[in-house]
Image (cartoon, rainbow, N blue to C red; front, side, top):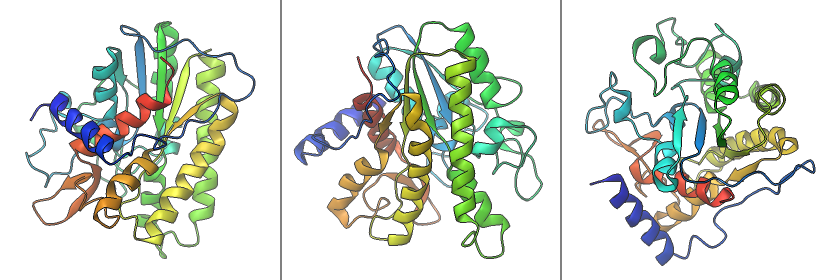
Length: 295
């Protein structure tokens, strides 16, 4: 089934469920900034983030992922670009943390390196765009070299939590507040570079994470805490927020709140679901972004 057909099905399902009205939360432009230029067909779009933005699928997902072919992975940035007719540069890296986004060679959760000491995804396989150095350094070069960029999206921080869970004795129970504080500080640094060093005046959309299971208070708290860290850090920079959390929640509510059962996550041959969005889940995130921007 084509991406466009999947998108049409998702939009129809949302309309029937009356989910589009109020499903997306856009933060008002902050800091007294002038209204940015609208996103128009033919303009440039820079997507930043981790495996969700990349469109990553687990090895046990069917069809079997072709990791050497980056073009075979489709995330919400590609869906947004297809819908709006913009040129996307998707710099996202699977396993990127907010710290590895800024500085090399700090520990990532599988981008440049892996917690177990092995190579990272980027070491073994191509990304959607090729670059040396950190994702932030690429963003700075890209924005300076593409003055017609009208949209930047950022979704980062989940791997900070995953890395903490994997490397602490208590599964990050006691360390989580410090992790969220660090995510907030790193997002502030990222957006300071984007706004001040790159002198980017266009639209920035922060894409919020979803919950794997909305019937689980623990899952919800983890996602909401991470989203709050991102959103609060980004607020002074004149951003809007794409409510990925709310869109998944409304879709999953039809099946008791489970994002896996709702078909929003990758289905694994080993049973159950992965943690990454399915094609339909990516389409929902793309719709959230599209609703958050000015055109």
